[in-house]
Image 1: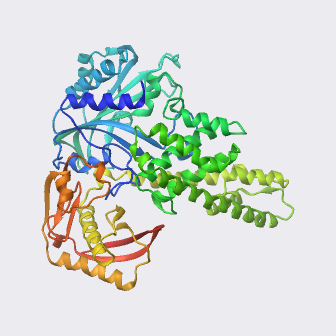
Image 2: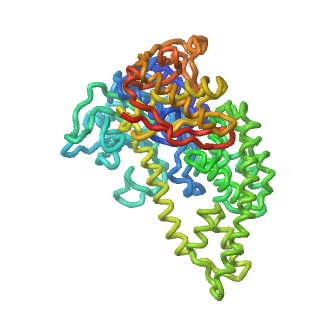
Image 3: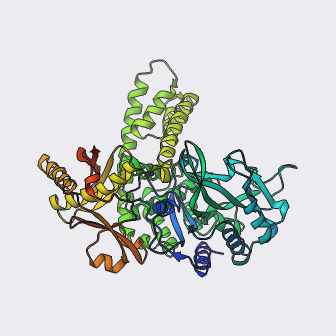
Length: 582
């Protein structure tokens, strides 16, 4: 069964159970304080999980494009992916455990025709805070899962919470038995031996955790996630996602082009190319900051491994063409943006080639300082990597050509620390989510609408938002602009926002058809990604935007707006950093 068939079966199945099919949110989050990219299906639905009414109702389903950056350096093995697709269904205060589990079981066994004996499930074991989840376990038994295929685990495995406090609850996970031999007499879904593969996770948000402990929620939600690439691999009996039709055409071409054989490099090229293309199609551009840096890192790592396989870099265009043809049915945005994708990747390739040339010059300078040493210290190898983007494997090759060794142990220690720091930063961004929807972030969210309106008045109506990031302490706003703002322009923007705040303008919310919203003058990013019924927030006659919220009730709640910095984000895109002062 092809991936697109699995996706369509999923969406149609839940549609038949009264779920509205909503479009995938873009990979570049709009006004989301928690992450660089959309990382999960629940992320764009945070306001509705918190109680806001969704325009499409209380039952939703979609496929969500996702990028997770924690394990970029692990890509190349047989399972890690940076970009992946998550299928999901949600109940916003509608059905709960029994119905959710019954639908999951029916989809797996009837629609996907997975034999019951290949399925195992896990439920929350219970602790001093919350009881054992016998409701979920009994629902599985009623559906048809044998009791000996139901396992119980603690909070580390079967509990979900966003951050330290916030909505939370037990989850139930579904596992597919690959048929591989058991690793021992106690082999079960918690093993990492490869016999059991997790395929679906249903989270039951029924508690709220605060400093005083756990309390029952009034609105109980269901949030589920099923990884498409993993399910496709299992149903096709493949060993890795790279063996499925999602990757096989480009993998085959890379193998034809390579002059040196290395399966890990082929996987890195194929995965990073797909990820880069998806990010660019949704508005991402390479830069030295945040998501732009992630995209730059993906492209450059891909190029390093093309060099490693001795593939001519001009073949990038061929590989992009193959992906567009192969993936265009699933992702029409790749067809629409094919030339843009090529231009961005080729331009970044050209910049990286210059970086490699510069790195070689720096390498020569460093070894000239080594005197009689024949081992290049790891800190120099890391400096070349971290400061100049010079790959350590290239440093090693150059070292060997010049009769040197490198202190790989010291480099690996420094790299590990760097990796842990990067991962912690990424996890800190993801730690937000539901828990980060505070009075401060809501105020900044509204302020971005005022800033957007002010920029249009000062710079011009063709200036549009290109992204934003909000924390409890500040806001960051990207917009297209072909010049550095003058002091007069910055002051005028700041004054306009503060004028609107002082006027005490009410913030109103309406639900309407998407086409009516556009006719009314409402602005948004990625209009094709919105459902047929949309939410429109208006701030008097100042601003009108499609947006999920939440927002303050009146601009007078915002305090004083102050621009702290204006700088370049990427080519043709400027960035404003600002704060609200009470």
